[in-house]
Amino acid sequence: MLKECFDELIDGPVRINDPFSGGYITRRHSAEMPWLQLKMSRGSFMSNTDKRQLVLAALGQWARRIRNE
Image (cartoon, rainbow, N blue to C red; front, side, top):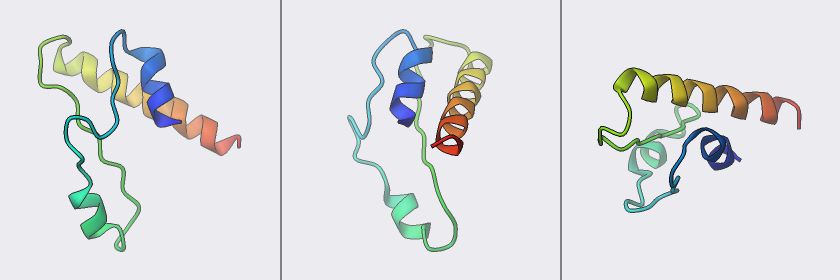
């Protein structure tokens, strides 16, 4: 569901665990608290400010959707 929120906001590919499987930090520390790990391209397709706004918007959409389930 989170991928779909990013898909709606990003004009380009959104991938999950590609090219890196990721998850070490979340697996290692998940007993301490819930985790969500995001990695965005360091490419200059957007400014860091725009990337931040996009991530916050996608997370907001996701939170509203899971709240309404």
